[in-house]
Image 1 (cartoon, rainbow, N blue to C red):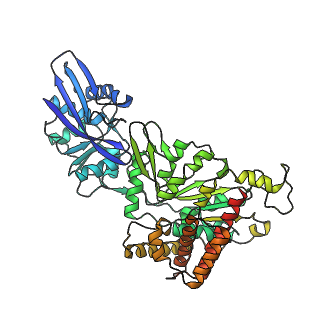
Image 2: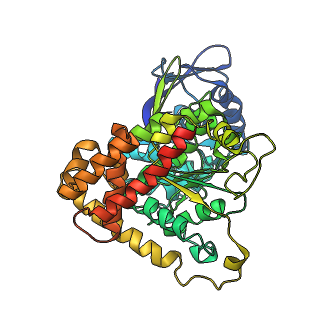
Image 3: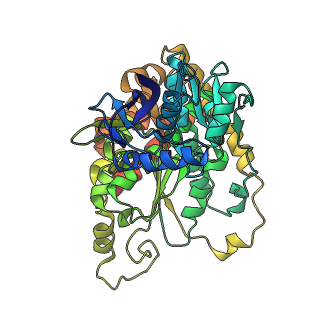
Length: 512
C-alpha cells in the first residue's frame, strides 16, 4: 500500500503541488528518496529516522521508498522532512491512515523530533487554501500561515508527538492567529536635517508618486541621511501590498516569528553586491534585493562604485516591475516594483562642485565626466528626479530644527497617493497605485495639458532632446506635483518644476 501526503515545491513565489508517496514493502532494509531531490532532501532520510526514534517509533526492517512526484520537478529545501515523516507514521499505523487527507504539509525536523521553521509557509498556505485543503506546518510559522485565510484549517505543531496526539484526540492543537509586528516609533525624522529644503522637496515628490531619485553632492552633504528618512514619510502597506511583500519575504526566509509588518521595505545593499545578490539567482533562484524591496525602497549609495553590469541589470525591472531569472532547467519571475533612490559624489574626490576647486587628476570637467560616465545613459533615462545636494554650511547647522517633520510630509504624501489610487480606479485600472506605474495610454488620459502646457512641453522636449520615455516621465512627475497640490489639472507651474528635475538629468547624461 502507498501512503500519500501533499506538499509543495516553490517556483518563485508560486507553490506547486508535490505528491509525497511512501511505500513500505517487503525486502532488505533500505530507505530511498527519489524524484529529482537535491542534497537537503536526500539528507532527510537521516533526520526522519532520528526524529522517529526520538518520538518513540522505529522504522520497520523493510524496504522504504519515498517518491516525490512529479519526478521532473526539482525538489529543493528541508521542508520535505515533515511530509515524509508523517507519511511513514501513517504507513506504519502510528497515526490514522486517512488523517493526512486534505492537508498540505511542510516543515523541517530536528533529530529530537522537533519541527523547525521553514521558508515559504505563506505561499504554501495560499496554495492550500486555493485547493480547499488545510495546512500542517511548524508552530513558529503558524501565525504567518493564518494570514492566508480565516477559514483555512491549520495544525501548527512544535513536535511529531504533538501531531500524533492531535490526530488521536488526546492533545488538540488550537488554530494559530495572525500576528503583525507593532510599528515602532522611528527615531529617524526629517526634522533632524537642517537645510537641504530642495532635497526634502524632491524626497516628498518621489514618495508621493513612487518616482526614482538620484542625489549628487559632496561627501557629508546629507544624501544618506535623507534616504534613510524616506521610509518615515511613506504610507503603510495596503492589505494587497502587504500580501505581495510578505510572500516574497516568506520565500526568502525573511519573516521572523511568523509576524508580518506593514512597514514598506527599505533595502540598502553594499556597492560590492553581485548581480545575483541584487537581481536574484543562485542555485535555488532566490529573490534578490530588488524583489525584497518590492513596494518599498532600494537605496544604492555610492552608485558609480557598483559594477556597471550590475547596474544595467536594473534597467528591465525598473521598466517592467518584475525580474525574470532564467536557468537551464527552469525560469522564475519575481515582482520588483520598487523606488530606486541613489546617491553619489560628483567625482571621485567629491569636491568638483566646490567653487575654485582644482582637481589633482586634471581638469575638473574631465574628472567629473569620467566618474559619472560609469552610469549608462539608458539607466539615467529611467530616473525621474535628479537633484544636486550642496554641502551644508556651519550657519545652517547652528539653526534650530525645522518646524516641519516627517509627520507633516507623510500626511501630504498619503493624501496624494489616495488621489492617485482613486483616479486610476475610476479609469478602470485599479492595479495601478502610483503615477510612476501608469502606462503611457492611461497617463495621457489623466495628465492632459492645456495649450500653454503643451507648448512648454513641446519646446522643452526639442531643446532637451527628450526621449519618448523621458517625455512620459516628465508627465508622471508633473501629475504627482499636481496631486500634492490637490489640483485636478496640471498647470504650467507643475510642468516647469518637473522639467527642472529632468533638465538636470539631461545635463548629467550629456556630461557622462
